[in-house]
Structures are given as C-alpha cells and as structure tokens.
Image (cartoon, rainbow, N blue to C red):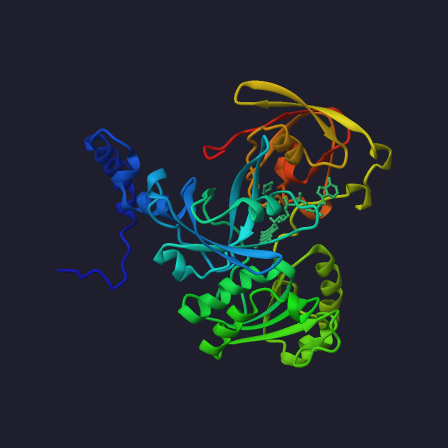
Length: 401
Ligand SMILES: Cc1cc2nc3c(=O)[nH]c(=O)nc-3n(C[C@H](O)[C@H](O)[C@H](O)COP(=O)(O)OP(=O)(O)OC[C@H]3O[C@@H](n4cnc5c(N)ncnc54)[C@H](O)[C@@H]3O)c2cc1C
Ligand code: FES
C-alpha cells in the first residue's frame, strides 16, 4: 500500500468546499447567520457596530480629565471590544442639534478592556467644541456611545523594531499610556523609550500614572522635556530634537512613533531627517482635522470668505445646507444635524467616503487617503474636503450613524 508523504495536501478537497457549504446552509435553522459560525460571533465581539457604555469614574487633571467607560448592559453592551494598544475610540455626541463623532485614543491597556473598561483622557482645546462639551457635561453615570476601536498606531512585531521610540506632545501622550500599560500586562512585547514634551512641570499629563508604570517594568523609560520651564530640575529642556533622541537611544535600532499637535509634527519631522532613518521606521498618529485651508498648498485663494450651498443626498432625502469655504463638508453636515458617518476625521480611514455628484472641492494634501480608483469615480472624504463651489454630495450612512 502506498503511503502519502508527510505534509501532503490534497488539493482535490477544495472542490468539495462549495457543495459542503451549500449543504450546511440548506440544513441550517432559520435565524441570524452570525450564530452559525463561531468566527462570526468573534468578529462581532471584536468589531461591534457600536458600543453603549457609561462613565464609571472621572479623574480631574486640571485642563484635562480621564473618563473610565464601562459597558452598559441596559442598552445592550455587555463587554468592551478588545483593541491594540494605541488605537482610538470614535465617540458620538449630540451637541445643541449638531451630530458629531470625535476620535479619542484609548489611554488604558488592552487588559483593562478584557476586564471590562476603557479609559480616555480628554484635554481642553482653546475654543474647542466636542472636547469642551465632554469636559463640562460628562460625569459618573453619563451614557456614552462609541464605535469599535480603530486605528493603525499600534506596535506590530512584523513591522516595527523591538524598541519603540515614542515622541509625544500635549494630549498625544494618551496612546503611549496604553502602549506602556500593554507592556506591563504582557500584551505588547516591546521596549518603550518615551520623550514627552510639555510646557512646564505643572502641565505634564498623566505623570504619576507613567511613574507607576515605569516602576513596574524596566522595559519602559519616560523622559520629560519642558519647553517653557528652564528652572525646573530633573527634566530635559527645549524641544524634541535629534540631539535628544541620540542622547537616549544612540544606536538607532528603533521604530519612531509620533503623536501630538500638527505644529510638533512639522518640527520633529525636520529633526528626524537629521537622523536619516528608514521611512518605514517612522510612524505618525493621524494629523486630525484640518482648519484654515487658505494656509495650505495650492488652495484657490479666490474662495476665501465665500459660503457655498451644499445639497446633501442621504437616506433617500435631499437637504440643502450652507458651508463656509473654510469649513470641511463633514463639519458643515454635522452642524446642520445630519448624521454623516465619520471616524478618524483625518481623511485616512475612508469611513466617511461620499460621492461628489457635482461641484468642486479642495482636498487637504496631507489628508487624502483615497485610492486612485476613488478619484476616477468621484469619491471624496468629506472630513478632509472643503467646498470651492456649490456642491451636490451623496452620503452613505453606516448602520451605526
Ligand atoms: C486619532 C486621534 C486621537 C485623538 N486622541 C485624543 C485624546 O486622546 N485626547 C484629546 O483630548 N484629543 C484627542 N484627539 C483630538 C480630538 O479628536 C479633537 O480633535 C480635539 O479634542 C478637538 O476637538 P473639538 O471638537 O473640541 O475642537 P474643534 O471644534 O475641532 O476645534 C479645535 C481648534 O480648532 C479651531 N477651529 C475650529 N473650527 C475652525 C475653523 N473652521 N477655522 C479655524 N479654526 C477652527 C478651534 O477654535 C479650536 O482651537 C485625537 C485626534 C485623533 C485624530
Ligand atoms: S472619517 Fe476617516 S476618512 Fe473621513
């Protein structure tokens, strides 16, 4: 009798897959298909359309607050979807008739989600809209709706070096707290050297929390860099420079993770050029929303000060709204109370993609995450598009919005 060699693959078996699946479906009982395959249940747990949570605790940090969010079984959510340290939650808000969703990085670690909570830390923004609303209105017991965790700003062993060199400014510290928590819990197998820029010793966000994490793991080192507090002792001073990076990690065997305000990116990117790193070793968190398009390259300056009519086609209805030339189409829809889908608000995730039926728009150069085919068929991302004429826009709502 002939023996099959070890590792033999019987490719003919593939032809039996379709008939077997058809038979399985014919015999299946009536009811939602998700329950038939365990993997669908798993997908739903990992990527729920929405998560109904409530605020369980609030920690005040002065101009920022941390909110611990737990599942709200009364509204149908029994667990927190798992996430990768560094991802964000898109929070849905209804503020004075505006329907807004804003991204906030998850600050807590993946192990906390498994144990039933997320924490986000929200910093007050001068003349901010959603952040100020959250800071002024959320308290213990507030009901909160968020989407499944999203984002690419996480450590991946197949892509990144074993050492993460984190460069953070302002509220950009939040995903690093999650990554550091993941290192302590064993969910992230990497070392973290974090250079965190703040104005003064008093304005360092989450300092005690980082001190505690550092004490628990010798894989984490945090260096605080103060820009406006020259007399404070025990800190580095100035900005996040190439010189400082070389001082703390001279051998360059690291992946740079960068998260902070747009102004910081502009400065730090120039410093990183001096180090001549491989581009795939430098990762930016999203730039976030664009304002002041008139300051961006190739913006048609004759649009400045104008307001355009935008006809929005959504759910079989048509609504015409005004959109000032310096406001993204997404923001104008939100302020008009239109539940337009969004996640990253930075042109990258594609969740808001809509069809430009007629008219013209200016697309933010650093926020154009469209594929070439999208351009051919008139798809745009309203979160990173400003009108430059009257516009007709077809919007495709998702189940959650
Ligand atoms: C992936 C990601 C993660 C994030 N994580 C966090 C986090 O963990 N914590 C956190 O606090 N934030 C985080 N943010 C930022 C957050 O999502 C909000 O963008 C931020 O809080 C400001 O939103 P807002 O609605 O309060 O302010 P906005 O209303 O968006 O205003 C922001 C600023 O822009 C100005 N502005 C608004 N509209 C215009 C206009 N038309 N023209 C000119 N200027 C204008 C305002 O005056 C204000 O100074 C994250 C962003 C991203 C993309
Ligand atoms: S919301 Fe992500 S691309 Fe527009």
